Image (cartoon, one colour):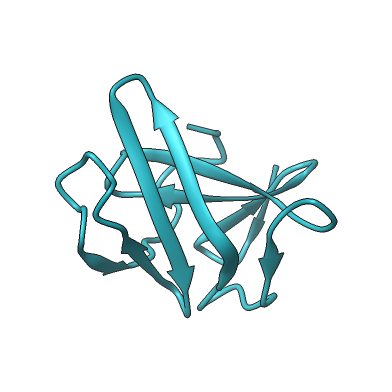
Length: 95
């Protein structure tokens, strides 16, 4: 895993970013059959939306221009809110 700016980490299959709602990282597979990325490390945009499930926690969001827009079908306290994507908080470790 390597850093791409202070918000993203490159993995073998794509990228990761830290989700403050889930307090962990979310992975994105890029390319064919995956997500598109605008290649902006400071204000990333990914398409389509991201959906993650961990036990009872569901996180559904769009990442647009460096902001995470949480959809109302998410089951965490950030649902329906939009926040700036935070800097990667880990010391090179994958959460």
